[in-house]
Length: 81
Picture 1: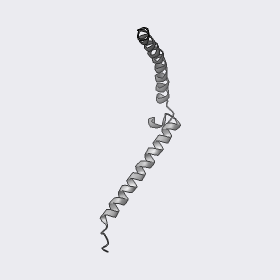
Picture 2 (picture 1 turned 60 degrees about the vertical axis):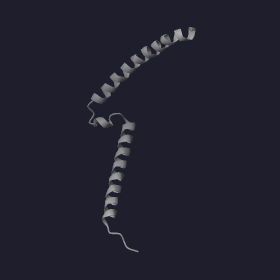
Picture 3 (picture 1 turned 135 degrees about the vertical axis):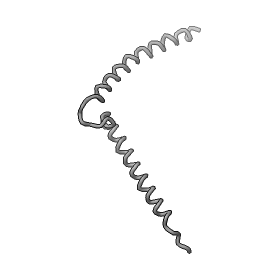
Picture 4 (picture 1 turned 120 degrees about the vertical axis):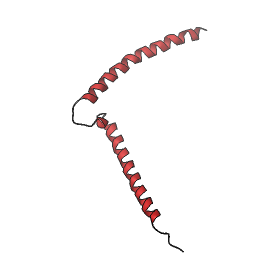
């Protein structure tokens, strides 16, 4: 019984301390994304965003090329053996 009485207190402390930290991070992110530095919004997050953007574009381009290749291959008549 003693342990169960302490759970709400511990949970309340954990959530109250993280709420203040979350508010601070949100304000920092707002300043970062609203800054006029000539970058598009999807690249303002830093090197992780640039890496994710480039990986996405590479996979998109590779998928498009493979789709065109598959359509081209499917449109050619099969050789009869």
